[in-house]
Amino acid sequence: MASTRYHPFPNTHWSLVHRAGFADGAARRDALTTLLDRYEPALTSYLVVVRHMPDESARELLQEFIADKVLEYELLQHANEGRGRFRTFLLTSLNNFAIGQFRKKSRSISDATVALPHAIGDATPPPQSVVEAQWAKSLIHAVLAGMRDECERTDRMDVWLVFEARILAELFEDRPPVSYQQLADELRLSSPTQAANLLVTAKRMYTRLLRSAVSEYESANADIDAEIADLHRALSGLNGR
Image 1 (cartoon, rainbow, N blue to C red):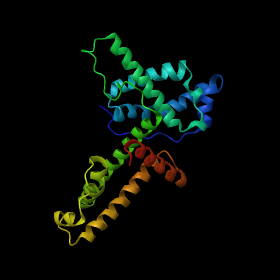
Image 2 (image 1 turned 45 degrees about the vertical axis):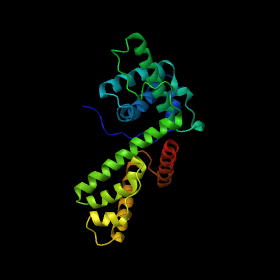
Image 3 (image 1 turned 90 degrees about the vertical axis):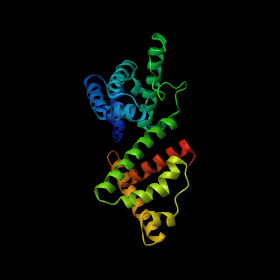
């Protein structure tokens, strides 16, 4: 069964990355094993959730990537803390590898029998900023799905509907926000002010769930704040907002 939910990337320990890339003998093997155990679920979910690959195909491609790039070509020796996030480095490398593999298949089998997922088969590998934004978008959508589930579970769909009409419609559907007066009429609220108060509640819920999601891989409050700022910055670069 496909893994439809993103899996968060773990917090990066650069000392482990360095050992996996440069240590000798057993120390390197142990570091590689630990690193791959931590990152394989997140990399698989990136291929499934963001790149829309079937679960089995994603796992096969990831194993090819590990064997070819990580092990044979010693990819981790090129990871550098001073050049940005390890997550972005891995995602960009994996994405470029996926494009190359699908190009090979398209050359060896007729186009009539090979279906390339559009996102994988793009002619030009996306830059790191786009890869990071795609991952950020998958995390945000997972948070929004959790928010809707919580609203349904707690019988507070009024909170979700206001958030959807005031925030999500503009961000994801390019529609103007619904007025508070209209929301008050549709939800049978006593006044537009009550609709505005519901939006405040919704934003607090979203912030809480987003921080909870980020805390799965960033533990310190300052790191959580920085990661959320980076997520929003990545998304702003993708859609211009």
